[in-house]
Amino acid sequence: MLKLSRQPGGQPEIFHSLQGEGATIGVATVFLRLSLCNLSCSWCDTKYTWDWENYDYKKEVVALDTEQVREKILSYECPHLVVTGGEPLLQQTELAPLISGLKQQGFYCEVETNGTIAPIPEMERDIDQWNVSAKLELFGGLSVKNNLRVEYRIREAKGNDFRYRDRATCSYQWGRLGGYVSDELFAEKGEFVRNRLYLGVEGTVLE
Image (cartoon, rainbow, N blue to C red):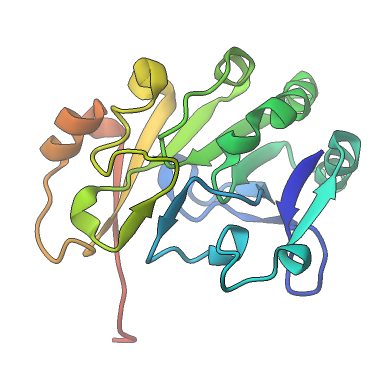
């Protein structure tokens, strides 16, 4: 069973929209949002997927089997899937059969991850693109569960898993450090080449 987040109306958070960031920005996409995360970032905009001190697990999470999730995804007739969270790789054992089946039906599959968990072989084989959102110690307000080190944790993941740079992009929200951060920093610390780095501008005021 996969643990999905719920939309405000209570439905599982599987929906059709346009990819809003990264290498496939603007592409029509089916989004699958999974619950649970191994980090607890203070700036997270999806705390309802993991913050059980402030959100009700029973109201925010729904468990569905692979076939139920597959049918909902296929109902949109859009062969592009982005799995997001939370941290999807916490559920990768249950997720892998779904991805494998969709790949056989011609899907392009992306996973959005914080880069701290190594993918199992089945996921490494089938995922077309890893969208790694680097969580840096410099951000501040970051607490980490399970005794993970608060550092450039892309390098700390078991097996240095995101070193296959041709299928992994790294995104960073410009402005959270309150100053200039060069792409050389990410290329050195996270082992991403520059043409796979995506720096976004953080908007904090209407103007």
